[in-house]
Length: 271
Image (tube, rainbow, N blue to C red; front, side, top):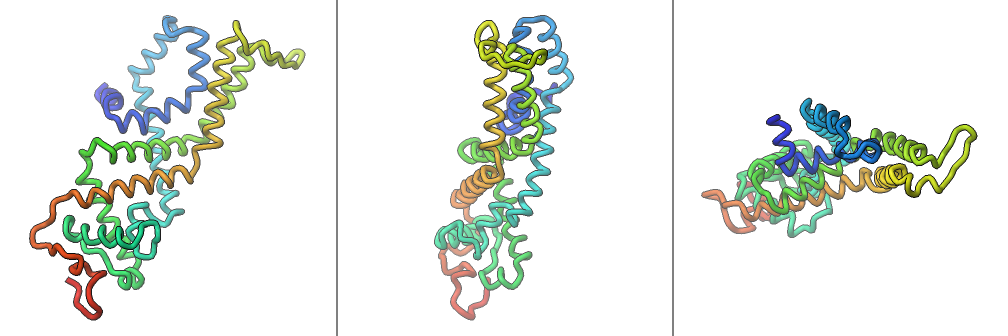
């Protein structure tokens, strides 16, 4: 029950994990509610048992697990996490001035010295390790941020988990479409025929099931894709790196831009 309570009250768990799981099964839940009604003792009993047994928590955990597995695949395709990618000298997502400022802030506020362009070119694996350290440390320091950063993190987690559930969602949506047509009497097998009048009252439950299922099927096929997840990931990475400027400067760290290794004079030793 504690886990279920956390799932309901925690905004990330509720929106990024539970919501994708519930939207996935929506096409098969709608006809049950339409047929039996929300006050039906049988349906109420079934939902109560499922809730008590942690069905919602289990579904959310499945969505999260599939999302994390998908993220591993996407990170390999992208060549790293967005926070790592946009800190690279060779990446052009950020303009040069902003990137230099982030590199300097990483040194002054996190104590992490990032490599120069020459050092990155010589050992990109070591450079990426430094960039990942910045992202990890920032996430640790901003974990309590409940404003824009949390919203962007939720948006990324939601789109990632929805994409991870896409295969199951498409199948259930197709089942919902077929069931909605059959429930409304719009399709008959003996003889095979289609009657559009079945989608109107009193066949409202079938029509509603069909509408919800078609809407979800369109969303699965037309919206939830790798490009959307990537866009959300980059947006979150931008908001995360913007938090660097708000962190306190470490004692003993230089304040001027000339102190950053990338801005040092040729031949000058790195600090």
